[in-house]
Image (cartoon, rainbow, N blue to C red; front, side, top):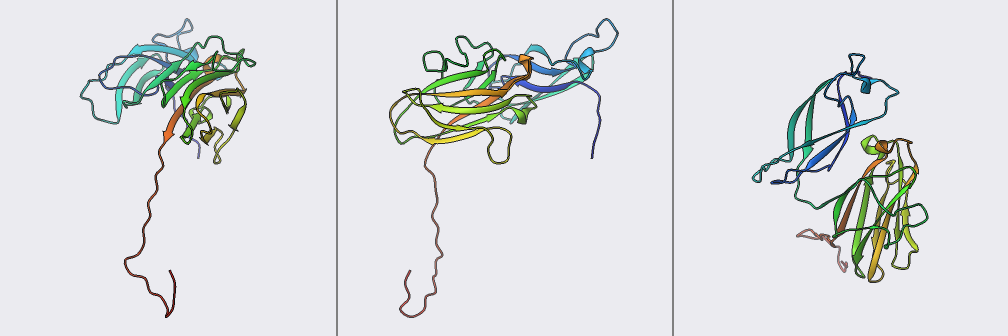
Amino acid sequence: RLAFASGPRIMTTIPSVLQPGVTPEVKLIGYGLDAAPDSAGASNSLRQDTLPATRQLSISVPADFTASHFEQTLPTSAGTLNLKIPVSSETQVNVLNPANTSETSETSDTSTALPGPCRINGIIDPKQRAQAFSFSANPGEHWKFTAVSRGLGSRMDLALELRGPDGKVIAENDDFGGRADPTLRTTIPAPGTYTIVARGLTLSESTLENYFQLQIEQELPNYSLSCPQQILLPTSGKV
């Protein structure tokens, strides 16, 4: 089944999650976002060969906001855009113009330092091909790294690498669980500063099409054990 619809299209927002009581500058990336028609009298951002554009606006979420999503309408030359952005108190890191990160230099010295578990909203420059993020961890801790790029409509094929304090790769993943995006789980072997590298295997020449989200979580051991209240055993049976 194939359906067609006219109007603006949002590919992603940065930040991707809003926080109660905060008024951030939200960058929209998509098509048909311009506020006025072009010289030809129509929005050129709806043509198939047009690259994505950006639009920035301030969105204020009340401090007592309790719903899971914040909704707002935005008039554009392609029609009215109905924004629906998740709301959460989780820590976010926005890295749109990474400095000192190159394909051959992805160490803790040139990476973006993270405060701990967080959500990263980033864009990879096709000339740099990667972004690196460092964090401190202790032995026995369980960490999970979930990246989304193709799942958001990005044209970038993303892979993840986890490097230890010595710079050696200790885990890596390209596609996971039938998705075109990577996920890593690891148990930290030794104390120190670790680096997670988000690498674009294939990238668009347009930087705006190379966007991604990276969720970094510290997983706590969690399991449950249950057994029936009655067990029927034969004579001399064991359990």
